[in-house]
Image (cartoon, rainbow, N blue to C red):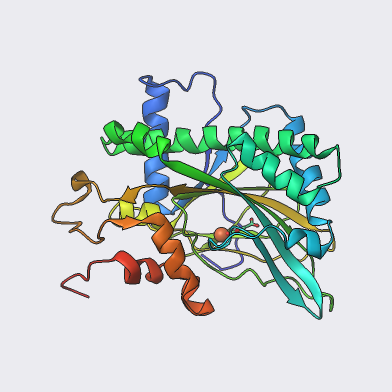
Length: 323
Ligand SMILES: O=C(O)CCC(=O)C(=O)O
Ligand SMILES: [Fe+2]
């Protein structure tokens, strides 16, 4: 296939009202989810189980937040990698900015964040409520994917404990074209260090997803009800390399700003590779590790090493005989 051919995105409908456990629809959907994750490392979820206004309202508050003065945004300190304020500069202009809300599914953390950003504003309730409702919807989607994946590997007995030990980060992001008029290609190809990441955005194109097995890039076509569900390095380790973390990048040409929302799951406890994941085709490839330890290790690396999944192999991988 030629490199400029438009490729059909793999879309899986996760909003069918009949999608209930132990139904034929559930079982066939869970097979599609597992196959997509093993083949591509991602899929696009069609998901509309939320009020339609929520898409517009989260984008509105993302703009209000990222329009705040730099000194206010800098107050969002977090020692964990990529959890605080991030920025990339071109010709003295910020062309990429992001703010993370850690433990976003805890209303107290949403309140803490909004009063940090708007200390004198009575109106920060609206920000807090919107973000909290949005994160609740995203967590439901993430947990649906986790349940399906765990079941598809006959590991459903571990699913509730896993979900109970999950911490979520919401990152609100803004991209601008470069001041010299060139497309913004600053967010280079990388894998996330999360377990699962879910990406959602406004109408401006730019996100590209690499298929692991096809070895080609797919441009993501945005829609209010489309979510890119992508594998992070931690699920790669947990699945003992059956699922490979997804390389993705942003290349934005539009004059209009691109806003996106990254929802990332992390494990609080140890991640151990279930023994059921180990067999002669998949010999044990990772030692048990702490997810936060992986993030601390990330902080110690040079920029070019951070982007690659090899950093996770370096952190907790077990060298294989053929390597
Ligand atoms: O803006 C996007 O769609 C991608 C964001 C992303 O890859 C990240 O925050 O890790
Ligand atoms: Fe990413």
